[in-house]
Length: 212
Image (cartoon, rainbow, N blue to C red; front, top):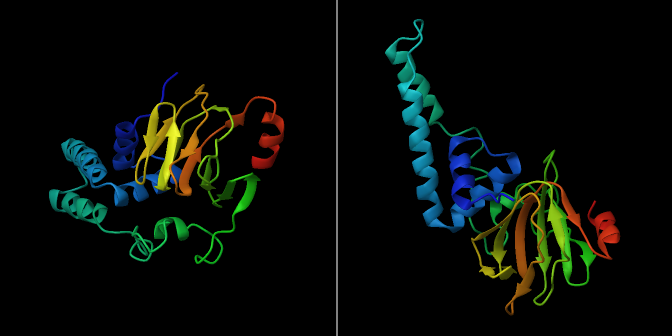
C-alpha cells in the first residue's frame, strides 16, 4: 500500500500536474501553512531551471524565449478575484468561490448523525467535498481505490495515531482501510478530495448509497 505524502503532493502542485480538486486543496493549504509555500517554491524553481535548460528551437531567438518565460509568470485573468484568503469563517474564500450557492451559507446535506457534507460541483473524475462533524463523531470504516487528502479547516481530526489540526492534511491511499474520528471540543470542518471511497462493514451498503 502506497500513501501519497505532503511533499509529493506539493511538488506535483508546484509542477502543475495535480488534478483540479487537489490543486484547490493545495492552494488552501498554502494559505494556512507558510512552510508549504517554501516546498512549492522549490518545486517551481526546479521546473523553471529544467525548462531553461531545454535547447532553444531554431525559430525562437533568445528574446522570444525571454518573453515566453515572462508570460508564464503572469497571473491568469480573474485570479485576483479568486485569490485564496481567509475570511471570518473557517471556510476560505477559494472554497466558497467553488460553491454554487450563496457564499454566506453552505448547503450541507445530512450523511449520518453528527456528520454533514457538501459536494463541490464541477470536479469530474474526483470527489471534492466539505465535511462538517461534531466532536466525538467517528467516520465509519472505509477503504479507497485511489488517493485521498483531507485538509482540516477547523477543529481536530484523528486518523490512526495522528491528530490533525487546522492547516494540516491527512492522507490515505489505495487499499488504506481507516476509521477517522473527531476529537476535541470544536466542530470539525474539512476539505476532502478522494477517488473511489468505499464504506465497509454492516452499514457499508447503506452509507455507500447515501454518499453516492
